Length: 464
Image 1 (cartoon, rainbow, N blue to C red):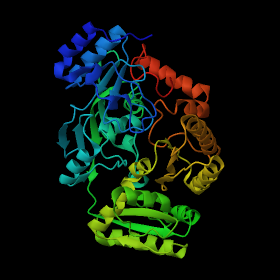
Image 2 (image 1 turned 135 degrees about the horizontal axis):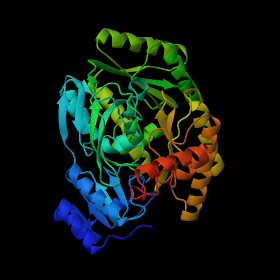
Image 3 (image 1 turned 45 degrees about the vertical axis):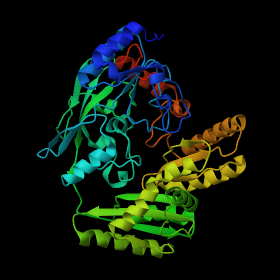
């Protein structure tokens, strides 16, 4: 179905992007064969680093004419093989497209290229007394990657996910056409929303070249609470009661004691408290100190009334930074604690979070395997990790498959879905197909075919 990259095509790519931006063979770092977890691996035939939308269009025209597969890659921080070139061909890296192009204060929008890192955009917005609300845990991810997976993050409870902040996109289709979707407008009812089809499509429909993103005024005050509970159940059950109080925290994170200890070891820093089995970490923000402190006190008193053993107010930047940096290191800390791991990124109704975590503990005992977890308690998105530790390859594969089958089946029984924010990529395709059934998958395949008749763009992913 696909053709290999010949010497003639390599020379054509060099004419488009320059010799220093076209790598082949041993010049390509082996890291480009996998993403953050490394469970899915395959090397590209050629790595291309375009420097403009026009260069991307030229690459795609060439690839489409010659039926060469193309996979787009940002920072490679994905966890489901979404940016792995499973069919070989061209790996199109957005590293050079890393400019913040415009800040428009009148429309409160910023225009960026896809290679801009989340932490760079967050810092730029804050320097201008503004905020880009989406806040995924991996700050070194690119904005293009965030848009491609509709990333959520810790502030989704109050502010929503990436889709809610994308006003417009400039994209290149698989045939090499440059399209501008949406714009700086706040509302749009002009036909099908092609922009929203692109968001979350994981690079299977087109290549994102620019994005117009909505910003909001930077909250003047931000404070956090760390609340220990005697057990997991009481911690999780506190979440709907907090929402019922009329206060909407910016973030509500669930953490277990063992995950916190992993983070302590990994960072070499002490957490404020590790005596309790379960914790929720909350942030509150707003325009005045009085309003934020009032919300925080109300929630603190509520938590103490319903069984919290203490409340730690993180009222200095240093204390807040130490706790949130520990939370941000959970993934790397768990990864460092084992020889290999894989992730189940399910989302369940918020009132079933405790049930699902309890189920993972039972599953860990049944399979005699370690399954730590943490998650966004406020929106039901859980990150559950199956750890290989000392298992041999055959036993690891068998237990990993059994754990995934059970977890996705249980999530579906609880009214949940396969992925809350990390996407489907290559690794989770079969689970999504099993949950959705034939008709939704056929609709996705039909959309893919309209955008990409030769199926050259990120083949093998999502609904393939």
